[in-house]
Image (cartoon, rainbow, N blue to C red; front, top):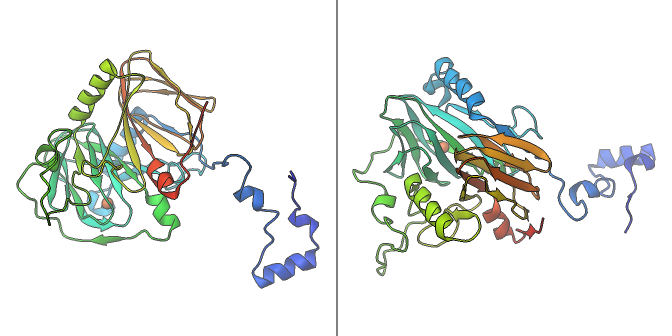
Length: 344
Ligand SMILES: [Fe+2]
């Protein structure tokens, strides 16, 4: 195996000029960039967004920019490896913190990328997806899958803030990202599917011929149910309590490209997961602790968000009982056939 391949500079200038004029380029000087040995070389760098630092900026956006001028009043969490203004937190994950003030609404649209909202604070916010009104309580996970109409509203009397997680970077790379605008949706007068058809784990609406389940049968995952399940798992399971959010009809991840995993760490618990080929973002629901990511130490608190690149060496340590949601692109990598875990 040759360590050092030929460089562009070794080639005569007239040949380089002729190649440029012909619209071609030699592969060998660039090959190691796109096919490094043994493991990818990520552009992504670990980021940490402290909620106490970002929250005042988001509230100020509420004073400076009316929602009509923003449609979605969001501060994007930019990957430090790509620099300020980067519309992504990792190669595949877009993250943004969104503010909706009392009485405001965000107009209906649908788009090719899929989104998930994780509610950070506030009462009274709601999302309407395909006519189903989804309450947004702190910690809830709310899906707005690609192609589904969605709008947001707010009946409460305090600011509502949520974290948006989208597979947007993938769709931008595919040149497949676009949105269609529409009118606010008529809402069905009933609770959402997590309170009706999928009220209890292990139970689903009876299957009858010709009455197939919707592709996305459950759009809201109430935090109260997730926390209760994590606590039971921590009390009686082995190792760290982790639960994947799944489609209750198929058992698959909730979205095609992005996966979501709820985690609970008991006071003082240490967790050193295997090196994973997927990138991750951790959103803290409650608690505090520290995380070492490839040698960089992040001290995190409630409602913070931090990221880890592919194959990162991660070591969590809780300083109190803590709950987090890990956002990752394992479903996409499994579909492409290369998801991998390596021992630390
Ligand atoms: Fe949207």
